[in-house]
Image (cartoon, rainbow, N blue to C red):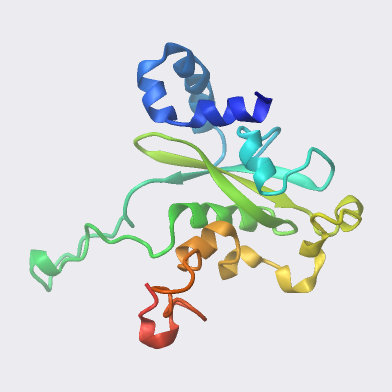
Length: 199
């Protein structure tokens, strides 16, 4: 069994292993302590989950970087109105964004590294307060990327800031584009088309 399969098996059911297996806890806890003290968007020296990073096109060469993003969990922290409506109409709790937390993480990574493009992202860990995602990013102006036929499609101008238009795998999932055929007639061309009955 190759190294990637060991990594994949380690992360399968990792939350349960964290509670039951001391060896898994010894690996995760130092990472979590370090990640909580670092910046919300920080460049990672190496991918934590190399199997997932390679799935999104990562290569250990110049032009590729991995950004680790910390996002708070929960709703939108709406402030409570001081007057003018009953408690039922306050609109404080259970108000959540339409975008997933993973998409928000990708957009924050893009804003931090504006000269790069997001290929994809994956979950690495979460606790009661935060979720951490790692975003695989690529420099479309780097010579090694321009010459790489596997990934130089992203150097074309129509892919500029693709994450803000929901074109990453997480964005397409949030727009309902994973579904095809019967039952998915209203999701294309967009969520707002077909009288907003896309999802």
